[in-house]
Length: 207
Image (tube, rainbow, N blue to C red):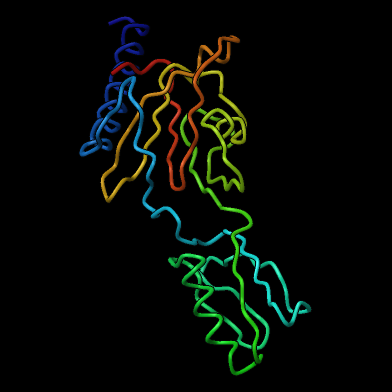
């Protein structure tokens, strides 16, 4: 057997093995081709989450007004009352809780809680230059997430990008083609959701 044939056989076997791994990894996922991926993520909409920034205002004690980012443990540290768990609550629920906590500290003072920024963590992997976790504090598109990850490697396929999203405990996958917008063609924007995984496939895999 010629050496070139042996190398080609090895390459085909490696590609086949990688494709098999990816197929099994997506077992149980629901694919969307040309359709719209459900917008709800694993985090219920309207609930506070780590990374979100909230503003706490006091009607009779403005000197205590402050903005706080919810820590990774779900808590914020506030004057006079210390650590308070905020993640998983609505702003109205947290506001009601803080009003009760501050009753013994501040007389006749209403507490107002507003959401300033929302953290949108996504994971970008595959054929990008700097794969990893990215946290946006504003609405962002799939293309922006890939660019934040350093952009495509020379082997990245912009025509078949997997956007994997968790909805009510079920993973859904949509295949996105970004090649038109990269060539200047007007294209409908797809925004990322909290917890999305974006996988840029290599060009030589086809399945």
